[in-house]
Structures are given as C-alpha cells and as structure tokens.
Image (cartoon, rainbow, N blue to C red):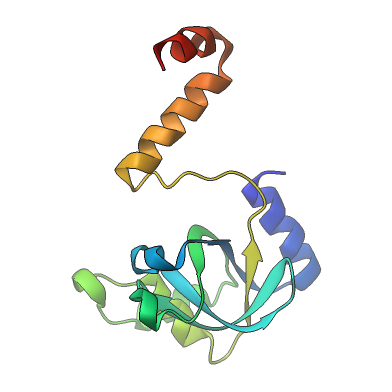
Length: 145
C-alpha cells in the first residue's frame, strides 16, 4: 500500500496524531527531524518528543520524520500560537512538540521504497528508478547505465 494508505490504516486503528517515519543511518540524523521514542510497538512507536536535526551523538533515535502527517484539528491552534523558530519561520515540529503536552503522537514505520528528493543523490536515484520502471525508458536507460 501507498504511504498514505498505510497512514489511514494506522489512523483507523489508533485514532491519534501520526507521523510517518523511517530509519536512517545514525550519521544522517542531522538531516531530519528525529523521534524521541517512548515505546516501540513494532509497526508503530509511541512518541515522547521531537528533535529537529540533531547531531548523531545527540539523536534520541534514528527514526526520521519523512513528511507525511495526520493531525487532529488542534494542530492549527498550536501553529497559531507558535513563535518563529529555526530560519525565522514557524516550525511545524515546534508546534507538534507543544501539542505533545495535551495529545498523543505515534510514529508509523513506513513499509516501502522512498527517495529523499531534498538530497541531490536521492533526487537522481528517484529519477533513475522512475525511468527504469517505465516501459518506454527502461531499455534505453539500462543501455545508457
């Protein structure tokens, strides 16, 4: 199933705020928002906190938030109250951290292939994978590679 289908199924089971997560190599935690895990429940993890781009030695886990969320409507209240954070912008992660004081969050472990298109190599890998998957490109692309 797609990542959002996985999220919807998890929401139907848990009924709480959800973030999609994926394990990353510990050396890469400084590139992502990382979960502080209260309890590992297999496909789900109960969230204790969120840490934005921690250095590997400071990372509470290697579970990265990969940009898919299901929130309760109160997230908008927390965003409205949020001051500017990193980069002078209102940070979603800060609002989520504030919301943890009143509502539970779970991380949903993504089951599937994902490419980090915010990274040059990840963007290239995504394009090659897409090209190889399309019948009109796969043969000439394989010959090129």
